[in-house]
Length: 377
Image 1 (cartoon, rainbow, N blue to C red):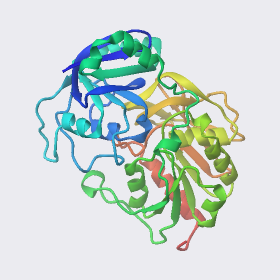
Image 2: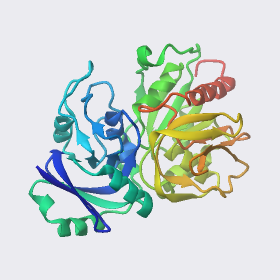
Image 3: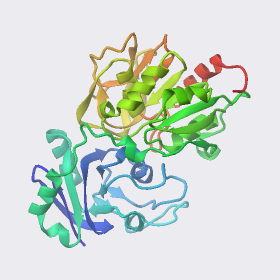
Image 4: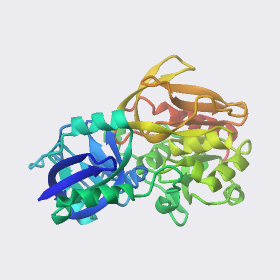
C-alpha cells in the first residue's frame, strides 16, 4: 500500500503503509531506543506526535498484553525503516501492523529514517502529515494539511489524556524483571497527579510499599490535602507545560505542605511553580540512551528521555537548585528545593523502555515520605 510522510517544509518521504489506512497529523519526532516500541506507542506523552524509530528493524517482537503503558496507542503515526514480517517472542500475542490497524493508527515503512532524523536535527521538529492508501498520492494537499495541524507550543494536551476520575492503583512489577523490593509496614498514601501517567511509574511506587491513588490533573490542591497523603507525585505528560496553568497553581499551593516528586512534565510544572521558565527544544530528547550527570554525586547515569520542552537553565527557582544535567547538551535534567522537600527529574527513572540506572529516585522519594510518617495514614 502506497504511503507518504510529508513535512510542513515540503519534504516528502515515500514508503509503504501498514496499520490503518488514512491520514493523520502530528509533530514529527524521533526516538533512539533499540527496543520497547509498544511502550513508546502507548505512552501518553506522545499524544499528537508522529514517532520515528531510529533503529532500522521494528516489529520482530510483535505485541503483547503486558507492556502497554496505558489503555491505548497515543502516537498519531509510526515511522520505521523496515517492518519485520516475522514475530518471534515468547510473550508475543500479535503483530505490530494488526495492532496499529485495530487502534486506527497509520504506519509507514520503507522510509529513509537516517535522512529523516538528520533533517529534523538540522531544521528542528515540525508539523507533519502521514498518509497511506489513495490519499498518499496528493503530496501538495498533504503539505497543506501538515501546515494546518495544531502547534505544540501553547498546547494544553493534559486535558485530553488525564483520567477523568480518581482511582486506586494496586498492581506491582513483575519480580522476574525488576527483582523483589524492600517495602515497609506503614504503607503511606501517595496522590499521583495524572498528567498522562505511565503504568510503570505507578508500579515502581507500589513495589516500595506505597499506597497510590491517581487523581485527575485538575484536582484542586485543597482536595488533595483533604485526603491526608504523605506525598504527592507529578507525572509525565504531553504538550506545553506552561499551558497547564491550573496544575502550576495547584503545585505552588502544595509546596511546603508535603513532599513532592515530579517526572518529565511534572518536573517542568514543578519548576514553573517555583518561579522558573520552560522553553521549546529544537528537537527534544527521546530514547533510552541519554547520559545524565548527577551534580550531587558526580555519577553519570544512562536514562530514558521523552520530552520536547525543557526548564530554562537560567531559571529562578525560588531557592531551588539544579541537580542533574544532560551531558549531550547541558540542558537541565533535575532540580531540588531542600527546604520545601520537592525534587524532580526531566527524564524517566521508571524506564519502560530504558535502563534502570535511575531507580534510586523512587527510593529517595520513599525515604522522604517515610521520614514524614511513622504510622499508617
